Image (cartoon, rainbow, N blue to C red; front, side):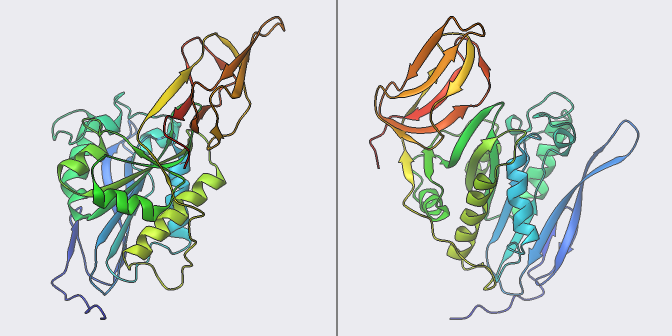
Length: 327
């Protein structure tokens, strides 16, 4: 049965702007000025169909140095994937524009934006931004897709993170089709934790590392979003759906492998690989050619994160490996 066209009463209220069905608009999210009095505004790209349907909010760059997520949302816009057959798609490629300008994870007040939700009207800059986002943007969304990358030099295999015992989220995560689905608890004061609190579905995508753009990871993010939009019957008929290669590996338990010695790190395997217990996965050497230590897998599992730093200190996390059985 065909959807009926939306009536003029179905107005979207976003940051003080009234947006009618069928409209394509960019709303500027004004958050603060630089010391020079120059305005800092975040473009919020809104595409509405004339047919009623859900509203999907797509965000990236909550940590300013996580460029890979920004590239995912950029491609969604550039390729017209954000123009829905029905419903509304809201894209915000860069949430933390301050951090993006300086390739920094944090806001100018030193706060991690993803640790201050729901924010405060009279708090620090990051807290004020979170407050405005929660009260003026987030209420519009039925489903949120948020794109992240690994911090520092830690490269995440493409994965969706959701809380356990959430059937609806698991269904959407499986539709997304990333190689891995990781059950992880909601951290207090995060964007994902905020969505859980107000019962708004969210998929958090992790892939790649900060200050880096990886085309394979970006492709996973874009194709996964396409599959979700297709599942919601929102995808334009002009956009081709690419099926995922295989079922996602669902991860319930994982462990970090840490460096036993300081030195130069040499990886022997790629992210996403499956290894057997005792497999040779890296070496740690000194700079002088007198020391060489073999790092071995503590158990069988998938490598879902690798540390790509050329040097490590004793105790640094160098691999994240699952403890589940092979899929």
